[in-house]
Length: 267
Ligand code: MN
Image 1 (cartoon, rainbow, N blue to C red):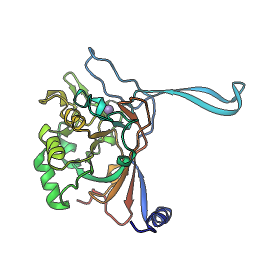
Image 2: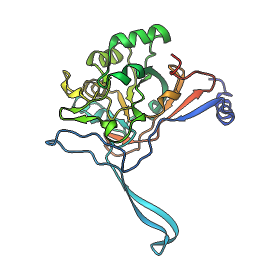
Image 3: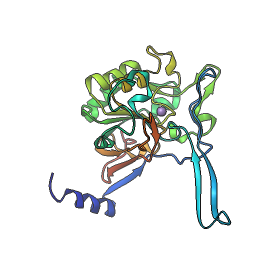
Image 4: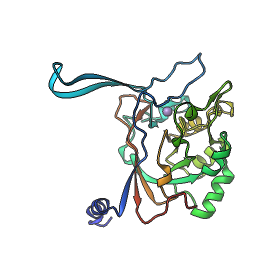
């Protein structure tokens, strides 16, 4: 690495030559969380209560107590989140090496298909077609599935019906390809989970969770602003909170994007 690289990066960010894109939804009590079948435990929404607000409870200061699940809002999934990753070493958010919280990211644009098919599946064929245009996915990359699902809100976002949620996601074979043949770092989505809304019906159920975490890989979900990322060439910054034995964590996800690159919208 050139000695001058880091100061140069700081100048590029300051000048706008490198853009910082926020891929995070605001933590808000109204932001939906995943809903599991009623026999299972449920994930809590974000809650905030005032401790004081420059008043008799604290005349010169304002602050809040907050509560939420590890898996509320834009959040990171660690390998210990899933039974397949239960016995891996360093599988909780506090034990993961910090180097892997910064790294390359590629974006596979599935917006056109997802607009007309709420159960759209990312398949190996779609990944390979993407690679024919943009090059082979480099080892240790984050792979994000862009669907523009983050532009939905409320009931439309979860899209729950009598038979469960309906939202796009990867097939088991697609996830296996990304892990076994590309050795990615992690997989991220704009939806409430890394799996499709109907992911319970695959074999194994919830294949993205099962295979990613079993292989020591990470997940990101409830991402936003993926339309501002290029297909390749950006850097993702995604450090979860350091929760002891935490299986995941809400976080601020940022991307560093060279200003000259086109977004994935211009396929
Ligand atoms: Mn999660």
